[in-house]
Length: 78
Image (cartoon, rainbow, N blue to C red; front, side):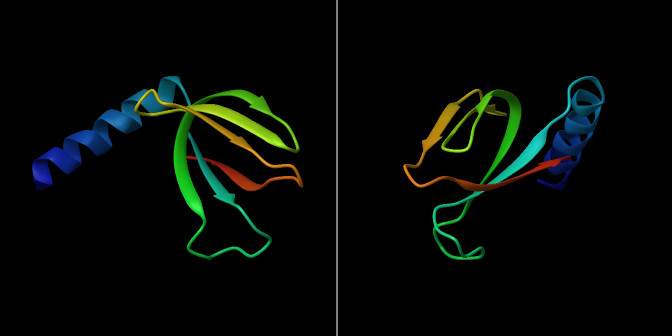
């Protein structure tokens, strides 16, 4: 199991050299650290707007997040 984690870490380091990855944290209310917060690893953004966020994850899932009142999200480059 440790070898698998190390190989995955090494693979992500090699891939991140050629294409950056981002950590996206989304909170569905104004308070950070609740149980409703979600974290994703994104490899490509399609749209980043005040009320709409669309991106592709490492597992090639396309995530769309909408909010009528505005989104609370943080984006960090890994």
